[in-house]
Image 1 (tube, rainbow, N blue to C red):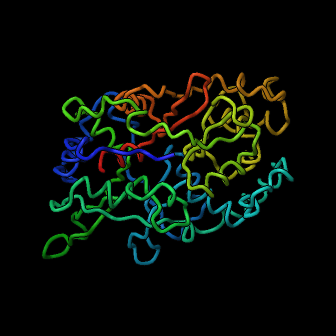
Image 2: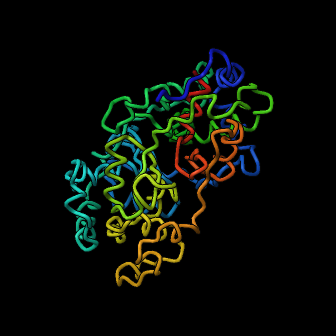
Image 3: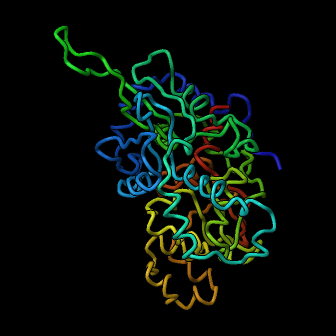
Length: 383
């Protein structure tokens, strides 16, 4: 099925708004947003790592600050070398520790993964340095009046890359965040402070989406067109069953270059949940074994929905989990869905109001027929 398509100039005002906004102005206006448009709170100080940091240290720090990514600088020169996020860490596990999970048919022969084995693997993996787990990322100057927000969207986020090329090993991988630097006073000398560059901000696709949503009433009429009209009902949504081992599910996402995947109780059944890279938020080295759990159990554990780590280790599980009644077990976890007739505007506001990176489009039978992400939205708007 064809992907999202935009008629020429149907998002002219939105695209023009991005093109006329310099990065410094955007960051200033973003900080002034209130309510749901303000987004989740960010750490008071920017979290940073060096290439000498270990995977375990990064996981603990990302968990402590409840964030998904951070910039990395060279441990010797101090130069910015890229970003690391939970998807990079998971990709390292899959490629370097369990590459067999990338082989088709592996799960049919190995239905379960061992918690104790993964705990052991986690100790070794988490002692490794970050240097080999980074992904490249552009560094943008906050005070550059020549560059604009549209360039950040197209060049920094790379949203114009065809979806089939999103595989993480591909050099054109879509980026969800970019780092921003500024020139600030540094070491004091007799002639005054020496200017130094410092990374000051991380800008995400969701940040740009919130910026557009704040002025959506003044933008294009196309925001009131339905998802079906805009080509966002593709009927090729990737799903896995809730009984799939979590690490295997992330391996599938890694292989297909996905940041999230739908969850069903039975193969091809109605949508009952979503597994995203963001669900790795808060995972620490001492809980590495949780990746051996079925996806349904992992989601309940990570979201604090009636399942504790001790319960998983002793197999003292709720009846619905033990019996594989996943629709019932996962019913306490909110799932944001819309119908094909929903407008683009409604869907964008669902992403923002619920602080989500994916809104699923479902038919009358509850089956997923489309998914809308910030990447899809910005690709459509900037076309």
